[in-house]
Each structure stands twice: as C-alpha cells, then as structure tokens.
Figure 1: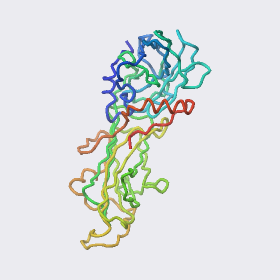
Figure 2: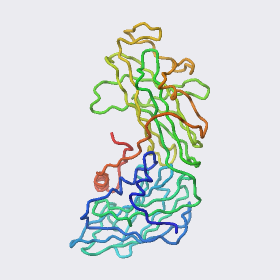
Figure 3: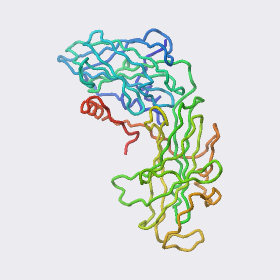
Length: 414
C-alpha cells in the first residue's frame, strides 16, 4: 500500500531537531477533550508510490460534528517530508472536489518550510469557513501528487489534516504518509555552530568560529546553500556590541572578509555547493574598536541557511557565542597592557598569521571541505522549528486578517 495511517506521535519523532521542516508537533499537538469536530481520512487510491510529475492519489476527507449546533471549520492540510529540503508549493499537486459539501475552491500556499493546501467555500475569500451542521458531516475527495521538482533528497510525503479554527479533536486518522519513488537514502540536515566563548577576543587576536553542515544519507541538495551569520541581542542585552569583522577561510589558506549586510553586525558568507554531505566553514572574528567595552562582553551569534534557489526560507539554524575582552586591562600579544585598541587585523592575512587557538577551540580552527569527513567536536545542533501551541491562533489570525496571505514564520523563537 502506498499510503498508511501514522500516529501524530510517530510523526513528531520523525520531525526531531535538525530536520528541514517545521516540526509536525507544531500542528499535531494533542488538544484537550471536548472539541466538537473530528477528521477522518480515507485510504488513498490507486495503490502505488507517488512519483515526481506522476499520477495523483485520491482519498476521502470527512469532518464530523458531534455537537448539537453547527460549527465553523477551516480545513487545512500541511505537507512535510522526511528528507533534507524544505517543501515548496510547486512541489505538491493538490485538488479538492466536494462530495457531501458546498462547492469548494482550493489553493496551495507556502509557509516556511512546508507546502500547505487550503480549501474553502467557492466564491468566498481564502480562509472563509465551512459550517458543519449539528450532528452532521461534510466530505470531499482530495487528490495529492508530487510536482516534477519535488526535492531529490526528500523521501516520503506526509500530510497532516487540521482546522485553522482549532475546533478539531486530534485523532490517529488525520495524518497520512505517502511512499515516493524512487526511494532515496535521506534524512534531516543539521547545522552546528562551534565557538570558544571562554577565550576572550583581545586587541590583535581573533575569535574562532566554525559552521558544520551535515546531511544524513547520500542524497544531496538540488541547490547551493546560502548562509548568514549575525549577532543576536535581546531586550535584556543593554551593552552595545562593537562593530565586528568576520573573515572566512578560503581554499588557498587565506582569509577573505565576509560581506556585511546593511551596516549591521550581520554577514553573508560564501555559498556552499550543493554536492556535499558534510561541509565545514571556518571563520575568524575580530573587533574594530574596543572603546566602551568595560567588562567581558558575551556576544550571542546565530547562523542560518536557506536554499539559493526555490524555497529560500531559512530552514537550518544554530547558535553560539564569543566573548569580547574589556577595553582596559587587556594585553597585546607582546604581553604589555593596552589602554588603546590596536589596529584591526588585516582582512587578507593568511591563515598562518592567526594566533594558535586555545585547547578548547582547536577543533574549530581546521578547515574541512571533503565530503564524508568525520567530525569529532562538541556543539549544539540546530534549532529548526517552533513548538509554540499558539501557532494555530496566530496563523488563523494572519489568514483572516490578510485575506489568505500568510506571513512567514520565523525558524526560531527569540
């Protein structure tokens, strides 16, 4: 059978940290008992795996109302994958026909790392609800297929049926898993940011930072990756962060200054070629002017990556930190106290000009560009999704208020 029912718990496990998608837990979180509606999805037919650009499979979508009064219902289907790439609206073929329901229009949209199918009463605004009669039900025939450009490093397709108004009691029968062909050896991608916040950056020295992109399996991306690095400051961070310089280790052993974005402490790094399994980006960070830094300043860093083509929503992220030494009481490499900052290190200095990293940072200072090279280091995995239970309400409000135009979700919670 090409599709089978899967429990919400099983799919939540499949959408663990490091995956390319917003975790299905964000959609399929258990709801308290007492919800008046339930959704049932029939068995897709014809049997057989979905292929890119091939035939669709059709199943029955039924919503039942157990209450004594009519209940509004905004049907919504979220398409995810167990692979490494985000899913775009063009990757999914989606069509809805009413069976025991009013005339229906449908629309496929893209939100973050997922494609989402929405259907609503014909001639109405996207986001207008159906009314499920008291003790009654509505049903539709839903056809789903793969677009020709469904990512080559994505495997099975998951569909999660939901209600934007959150009137549905979640059941095991509201999620479908479709097998795809050809089968690919794939899995979630991950991003790690390695740094050494215990060794402060002083005049004439650098902080060492490494970014490690890792794929699970042998299937690679269809597009290069774009990556940015930025300083993060929250409302409780009162100390201004001085201007920083970020340099990237090139293949010839020299360091090239990364492009600063819009005058902020945010930098565009070099694109990563799509044919990688593991890629390490080695960076060094220096301070332009230490003036105003009165005590050691811990600076939070965030790296994020997106596809260079297609769905360009960032889908990988990782966090780390560096520490900047205070303006006074620091020492130069020669050992003398320095009350005034030394000159900013040359952006074209060779790799050998960099001071030897501390023992805890040595692992982050080595450039590794070959595929399948093992990495034996420590660091936090990417945080790639929100499990905020207010997701339904926020998205519904955005949909209704904007007439169906959804605003992009952030990958991470600030």
